[in-house]
Image 1 (cartoon, rainbow, N blue to C red):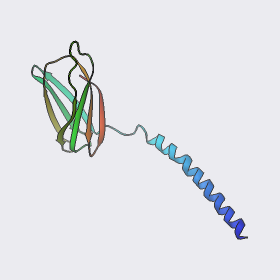
Image 2 (tube, rainbow, N blue to C red):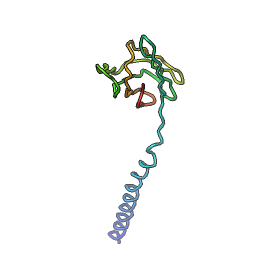
Image 3 (cartoon, rainbow, N blue to C red):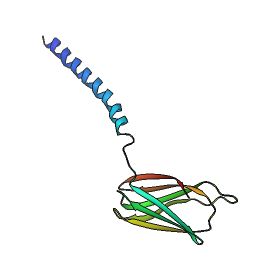
Image 4 (spheres, one colour):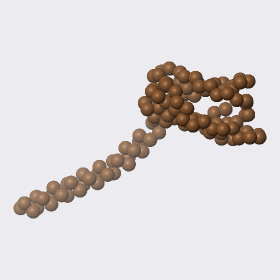
Length: 125
């Protein structure tokens, strides 16, 4: 009698494990695409360089800005910037200024913050 009872427990455990295993991918799929950017990015150019305004919509802390040239330069490819540190307060803006001349380049940009995660921006002019 104990043997039969143990088989029932094993069968229920196996069915429960199968249901749980099927539920995990469904939960991952339904959660995908619901994340929103925790920062916004705006740029402004003038004769002396580019100002990048990063605004918190959920990010905060010691953050890092990176940007790589994507396309659009006509002569020499501009140098990328990697992991420029700045402090972003919640629901505030921070400006970064980069000296240089306008080249018409489009950039891939990334903002990384300890709170809010990583946001990618394509294209940035």
